[in-house]
Image (cartoon, rainbow, N blue to C red; front, side, top):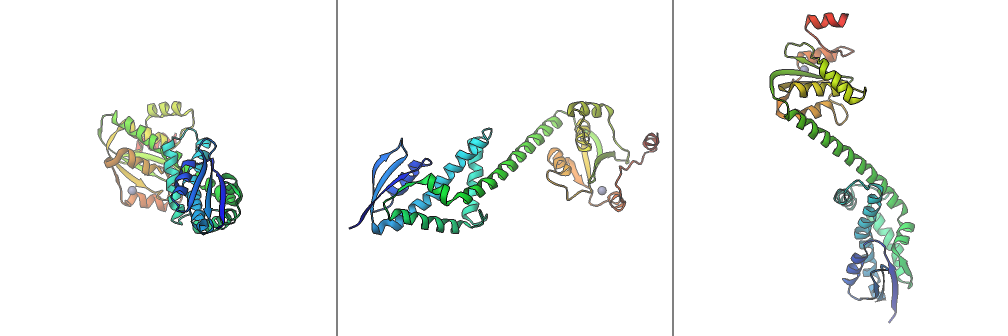
Length: 296
Ligand SMILES: [Zn+2]
């Protein structure tokens, strides 16, 4: 009977490797060294396939997870382990469901190639360094995964930043007493403006000055409009959204998140239709005194 002896070292997820190999009938683990992350195992020829399956499963589950976690926590030390674990688990689920293709191959193809690579080692009494094997056999797989994960982390941080800013705006709004005013918010592709129920442009010199000082001089019409709206705390906001294809996070979306049930859409009112027909969208100001001021 031909008995093979294989030495295996894995820097990542070593306890899981021990568990996985212990579960295979016909494998005898010897020289288990948890400090050195190494073990030896003895098995007969007919167990090669099962051993190969167990090691492939280990590589694409516990090892990959631990490896990605270690790399991500080095690159993004300000993200918590829970956050990184969540992002990694979601990605690995998509990978197994073949929802993402990495390095030009799907998950099944990577598994198949890995099994072929491992099989030849298991039949020849070799020493297998899992990290070395993965570096050699799964290089583009790992590189591709990391580039997808970096994009996900980036998006996750943007989402988190956005959620924090919405929470801050909501908090600021809660500190303002609600007024009986109805204000109209117009969102065009290049700017945002506010009018009252009569169509007069709403300006606020004090808020503009304060917002300008806070922004360090870099103030856009969206920030200014949000500052004015929070300060005035209207009970009702009619949203005239002429920029429905705006990139996330759009002003109208943020407005809805902050003012919630106080916001309602105008449902393509005649003012919106007129503005959309006009080539250039300018603030509408129905009050004569503002018109006079603008003409100065
Ligand atoms: Zn409208």
